[in-house]
Length: 504
Ligand code: 6LW
Image (cartoon, rainbow, N blue to C red; front, side, top):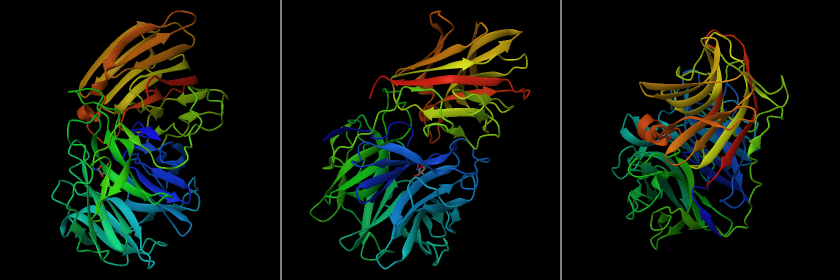
């Protein structure tokens, strides 16, 4: 079966995968967003559906100190002896930890912290029962991959942390994963940094602590040539499927245009793995990931497509909605008026790098129409509510309903670093439909009331809301938000939200 990459589009970086019998599970990193670490399920490696989040409590995921692109860095998911284990780093709260659960959809345990520094933690469960814990660390022996042995029931470190490989000389050796294949320990890592120089390298040893012999074919994955429309591939994880073949998931970028190179964020890609005669894995077609590839020999198992409209008529939010850091108490409710998502602004704005009233989803398509019906009559105290195309607290475009000089207004505000522009139009009392039309180069903002035609307020370039300009590790979010500088509690009631993709 042919499939199209990415297999999980939108800001879903640093994927890690495990297999349990005929089911596959995958997690990605989530930085300052809450709940953290979405977990996906597939039966064919191509079609994925989200089944929950791993980190759903403040105890598991405190983000109060997480700046933009802080919080949860890369994750690893493993299954052993009937338990799922997810390990990650909260770079803004506590460092490396893991949680475990008997079921992939949870409930997951309280965090168990591990006394080893660095990022990109991973586990290897050896046949003799030993459990090895690896991270990318700049430690006492220099920069590279460090390993210790741990007690998986308590997280206690049982040995010193030792440098086991420094990679092949690329910048930032990171994202370690260890596999035992045909009696040899394979240690696979990312090098070159998670941008356009990204690559995957591997080494192997007869012993878990090495010495590791580097693969003569390194890098085993790199899209560094300009030929491909996919770039920055790396941070891979391997899985063996039922027919014995091996497959890789990894992160990559799809630059929307050249030379702007902007994109939606780092996404999750799938590639076949082939083995050389001397026993080394090569990811993709000669180490490249392609947009169209031939999938695994597994029965195709598509999931029902997501509806365009979210009516907000369930008592809980659909799991593709997430908050910016831990949501402030009373900032949102679905139960006060069933069929509406009500946001109550607080004095925290989108610019503050904290937790404004914000409910958002990833932009997963370059061509997409989004809209929401907002019931909100702002008071004179400068409150506002609306939609934001959000990269981080210094790069976002907001289409909001507010009040200026006693008049209800529509404002389009574009915040790009220290630059800010505003366009203001009149607005009648009553509900407003706010619209955002996305294409590869622009977001176009419109509003519509009653039976009148939609009115275009303005537009903003897509490339300014991309890590190439805004920096960081996250991706483009579309969110409903509310802001109340005086703390007044005018409810912003969202009747529905439409997300209509117009491209793959
Ligand atoms: C991830 C690490 C990285 O933990 O970026 O640049 C971090 N490399 O592998 C966040 O994705």
